[in-house]
Amino acid sequence: MRYFIGNWKMFGVPKSINILNKINSFHSTDKNRNKYRVIITPPYTLIESYAKYFKNKKISIGSQNCYQKEQFSSNTAAVSPYMLRSVGAQYTLVGHSDNRGEGDTDSMLKDKVKHALKNNLKVVFCIGENKSEKKNKKTLSILKKQLIKVLEKNFNKNNIIVAYEPIWSIGTGKIPTVSELKKTTIHIKKVLESIFKKNSPAVLYGGSVDGSNVEMFKEIREIDGFLIGGASKSSKKFIDIIKNYYR
Ligand code: PGA
Image: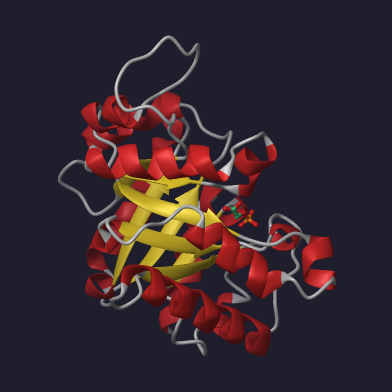
């Protein structure tokens, strides 16, 4: 199974559902439709209405983050996994570099993953090195550290997806080379196998993915799909990624 996950970040109002309707129509009739899943993570404000609307359709709705406590607490503006699940979210991103940059630590991320899984949300756990770590050849060790500090053997790996997003690639148009990315993805899967003592969960790539570069990634069979930011805000761009991937 492949995954095409659209991360809307701070984008979208109720009528933006038109974008998802077009993606849903494409997916419903695509001859490759059984080979992949489409998940969209709109902002918190849209999760309930979108999840209701797409309940029995192809697209699944997820959240971009969740708070590191399970149910209710006195943290202003926080939204818990329990609250997200109760309005129909099926997935949540955890550890996006935007949120790590705003102060999410490994121990907070561990609590987020734990409580999300406990509340039946599937977790898309994001990792990635920054530009200077890459320059200093620290990529593989940084990724390993990000994985082992947060994921544990007793987490259900069937409900976890890992998204590798090099920070220097997000929103910049820069992407890793095929050989670099293949090596990195194999490394991530090896680390995950050692954590879970089982087959690795799915590993996605994210960072400037679009309809013109996605064909390059299909050479790397270890990549199980994509986390797509900018290009997920346009139905045409998002559909082009899927079309070109299977062409
Ligand atoms: P991008 O964002 O596709 O715009 O680079 C990816 C992400 O941040 O998830």
